[in-house]
Amino acid sequence: MAFEGITLALSKGRIFEDTLPLLAAAGIAPIDDPEKSRKLIIDTNRPDVRLLIVRASDTPTYVQYGAADLGIAGKDVLIEHGGAGLYQPVDLQIAKCRMCVAVREGFDYAAAVQPGARIRVATKYIQMARDHFAQKGVHVDLIKLYGSMELAPLVGLADAIVDLVSSGGTLRANHLVEVEEIMAISSRLIVNQASLKMKHAILQPVIDAFAGAVK
Ligand code: ATP
Ligand code: MG
Picture 1 (cartoon, helix red, strand yellow):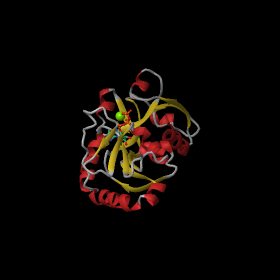
Picture 2 (cartoon, rainbow, N blue to C red):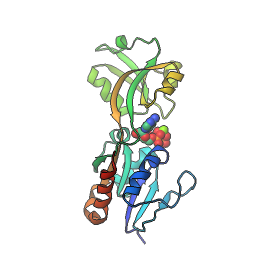
Picture 3 (cartoon, helix red, strand yellow):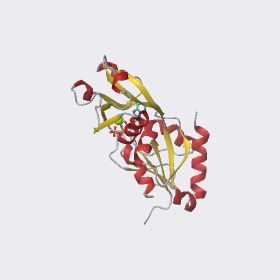
Picture 4 (spheres, rainbow, N blue to C red):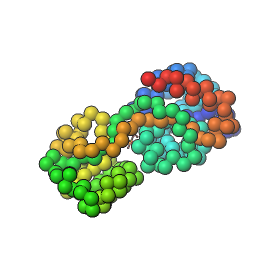
């Protein structure tokens, strides 16, 4: 039989950890720890609430199609996804970092981004990188990578990377420097618009509890 309650999609790791206090504020406690359990559907103390454990970049897709009623996703992921069909009521102020441009130490970035110049950029965040360099009037050849972006400038794959940075430790360890901040990033609560109407009585108090628990 179909699940009658509400389903929340979120990813393992920092988003799950930062979400636990918000769940607690809504009276929700997961039964299993997704870092230890292999289960992808996690029950909670509330029979009317369950969690889906998904890949971070898949969260908006589950919510968009209504496979989850709500979810928690980084602004980076939401921008790349496009956000179609998603209501984004709360900036949860968790998993904070920034989207940056970084280059090798000694690389003349100012010269490389003169209007009309052409630059080679490696990134997982194609949409954000394209928009950023378009705004500057710089031609950009984008190279899609799925991880370890820091490597690309070191081996001549790209002049620059667009990536998330928090402490900057990985950049420093690889002799890269941050030359531009594109935007501050945090995670948002996202809600399926049909669910918000159909399951309003159960969803709205959860949304309100999350909003009230934001620091
Ligand atoms: P995967 O690691 O599965 O390839 P991912 O990197 O998108 O995917 P996470 O590492 O769990 O997934 O990151 C989830 C979200 O946390 C990102 O979308 C981003 O908003 C935020 N984030 C990423 N890196 C950091 C960081 N170093 N510090 C704080 N928040 C971060
Ligand atoms: Mg990651």
